[in-house]
Image 1 (cartoon, rainbow, N blue to C red):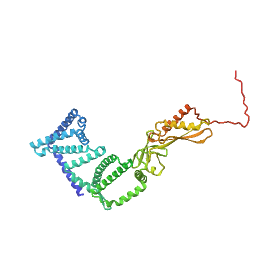
Image 2: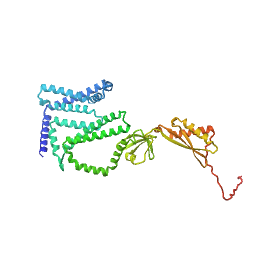
Image 3: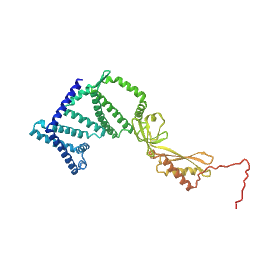
Length: 436
């Protein structure tokens, strides 16, 4: 309780000092000067923004310089306020005692800390991280300026519990959360940078690029966590029991998630499926767009995006239309009447298929007579394409239309079923005369 009492005593002294300042005749004067500096800062920022186009001015600058310039522009009023308040503070120090300008000095220090933190944190694009970093950093700066940082830290450290050989205080939790947030942000940014570098390497296959990128991200995040735990003084051996419990929890509660994660790594390692492949899984047919840690995104022809768990791609039967070769063979069965010459039908069917734009000339289309059906001579027309991502049904439709056109032109009849109806007994038909 000594730390608590010490902090409360210091807080009481601070409040008493503030009360003395408020009761002094110099406080309204300093407050008025601070308000005047704030009004002048807002006015000056408004005038500068109307006369200066930051976007046009920074056109062509490096990305980092543009971000800094935009951050300065966003906090221009605070910057002008700090400059004016600092000038007022300097003049008052020359004319009066330092205690008679103390409040202005505190305002200058707090404003300077806010400007520096906000401008530097403006480089963070994630709004959540930006808000957390600014709020945390400025709170620490304000406590330090007011002389309350060390007592406040001791107060937080006094609130603690001991689990086994590990002492967990409120200060340790806050430090760990803050450091972890910052290091994870750096790890994520570094992972994105390295991932872009890896994707720019032309000698790697798409699946290897994705695999290397994911392994780098996992390694950086793991390294960040280990560094944070070590820097805050947590003995990693003390977490052995906790990690064992987490492992059991993963084994039972997160089994599917872990299975999908490792299935995704297996798919990327063995290159059985990679971004850009055309696959069929059950009723789903489309091309692989992205491969995530838990699922693979497959875009179908109607624009829908189907998220297939990685485990299904490992355990189920998957048709990869472009695994080792982008050429695939399609078939179109059809039938003609018995009055047609099958040799002529084969020749004109091949000619019709050869006239379709997407069908390859090598291998050339072929047509075979498969059987003598009940009502027709049955044929099968086989042909090859190289662009399954453009669709399968549409090219079959083009071939059928080409067959229809050439059959109509050559006089080849397409049969239809004929049914004979037989009556075992005579049927009496009565014809009634028409009514009047």
